[in-house]
Image (cartoon, rainbow, N blue to C red; front, side, top):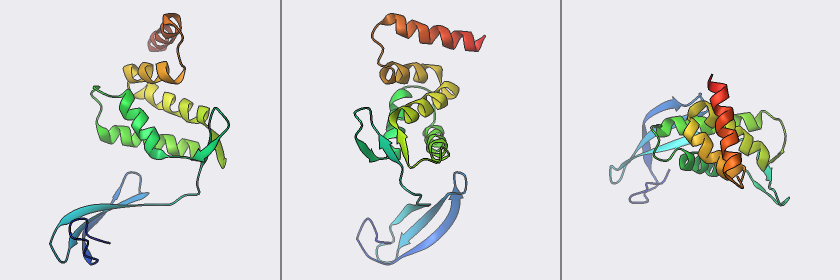
Length: 152
């Protein structure tokens, strides 16, 4: 592993521990040349998921796009980043559990909506307004009424 500070090739592992649900290993490293400490993560590499977009183009599934979407929906909400990352992991896991090599962007949107419904109602409405492309206030009100009914 190359040092991010001095680019020296030799680093030593100071500490290793499992993160998340035992699918990630977090390693604390130290450069043998400049003594800079940094963290690396090892993640299991799974077969690629291909996303079929609305215009029928295909692209590789990008976990970071899901994370960014969740972060945008949860902006200025009292939600820890660790919780958003955990929800991103849940979404990716649920998509992989479909056991399909290709998934639609709708599958991703619905998985995100399901996670946000449990996490935060304001974030859910924010995401829904973009994902469902509300044309007017009545569509938004329908979503809010359904949320309120589910709460009762």
